[in-house]
Length: 352
Image (cartoon, rainbow, N blue to C red; front, side):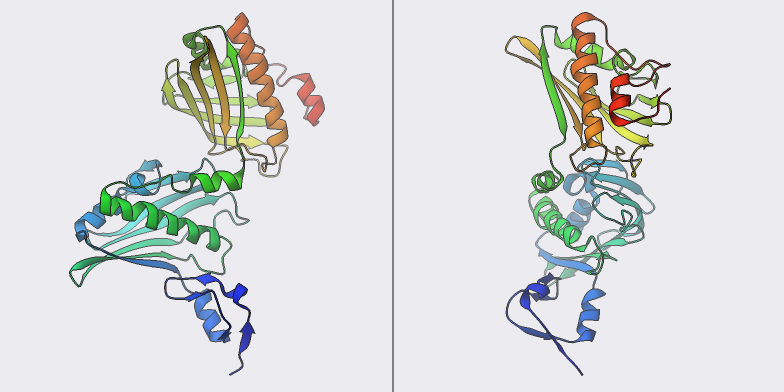
């Protein structure tokens, strides 16, 4: 059988059962094929009982996804998980649940914004197997379908390693997980989200009231509730930009957060680019004035729409919203005119 010599740098492949990082190794074609077909897996031996391990795994928000919707404990439960605004979205269904022994999630939908194939997780399975072994509890984790030949492998295996080693296992052993474990790393990779701030003499209550009066500073073509947690509303400018928001958090005079549920741009290739991002208004008293900090969490320089969206938000926040707060009159898009003439001309958008 012919063999091929691979330099060590090409063989720094981490699998639970294979670790090649130094020296010179002879690898034949069959061995390479085995590695390519190897699902990511990791095993732990713990002092806690199988029930304690099982209970921790099913408490998904405590160790994996704080941005969690749904249920994750019983057969046929379904849940959605989002990470770092729009970097990772996935929907899982529990297709097998054997208490204290086994849990299987089937990924029924996924969107990983950093991949060419954004749905690469869809159809894969995340498997947790629990067994008593030599007086301890063995936890065997497998992401079936997460293999070295797929684009996501390096980043996703690193992600799972971080969440398992530094969040799930601490949750099992100490009662406290760390679902924020990757925040710093992802922030560094994805860049800084757009943010801008200003201070005014008006009270926090006046600032908050102006923010929630969206049609007076953003667009008159806003339909739906814009002030209470759970409210949903749509914004539209012709077929150029249509967006649907849900108010996720509303702390009077302090903070309000919108989640972008759906979005359409007709001037960039990825028309859904805003989907999953958050729009955050934070209010605080500072040096005798009221400071408003606006952040579009997830709107980063790598986005195709970043420059135009940067300019538009700056105009709306520093111009229209600030004016509404300080003078009682904003400068929103009108139902008839839509965007400002300046922005339409600068970016070559369709005119009325």
